[in-house]
Figure 1 (cartoon, rainbow, N blue to C red):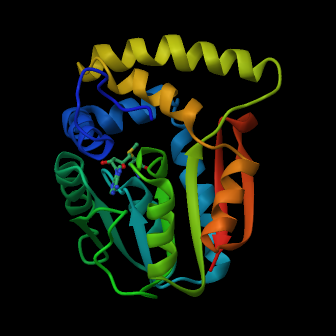
Figure 2 (cartoon, rainbow, N blue to C red):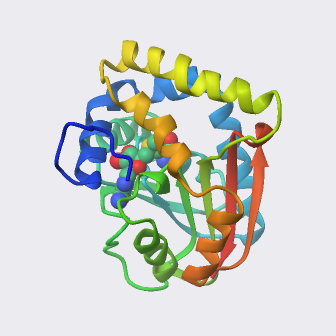
Length: 239
Ligand SMILES: C[S@@+](CC[C@H](N)C(=O)[O-])C[C@H]1O[C@@H](n2cnc3c(N)ncnc32)[C@H](O)[C@@H]1O
């Protein structure tokens, strides 16, 4: 299992929380800078795909600094709850949501996605942006998402994937393994965070493999929407 800090004996969850605590101050800047702002378009598209389900209560898993929650609030009449295990990321998110005057409709709180403190069938829709790849146990996390989702509800998972065709594959690999770790390290001052990112993406189940896991957990109508030549994907599935 790829973990952020190779010289540490602690479990993946602990390391992931520590890593995001360390980079929280720089996370939003690096996210938008290193993706050239495309990450915003991906979240927008994800929310457009959820809209036909007319959700009122949305849970944003691994919410981090709340960017997906802020996008989800554009759905009519919706309230959003976001959970994360990094207190540093949550602090930045809460600050941002207060600045935007959205505190009445978005609540961010500490919470482990692999052990959600919500009752069964509490939410109409669940979003997760670049989060599930960081779970210590992917299947437990996905099963928890399904448990708290109402029947007929939708889960929308945005994650990096791996382009397969020339020249996107070659360009992506060069950018991901060479350019991104360099800028990530310079700005965040964390040696590992931006080498962990490509390594975790290459270890993570992609495309059909991920759809199979969703099916195994009990989701139905699972689909992949490839984004920007397959750099990222939106996975949608229903309960
Ligand atoms: C790359 S950030 C994504 C933040 C945000 N969703 C976005 O779209 O920018 C991944 C987040 O997943 C969180 N995370 C990882 N494992 C988690 C878990 N088991 N439960 C809750 N949050 C988790 C990390 O703390 C981190 O804030």
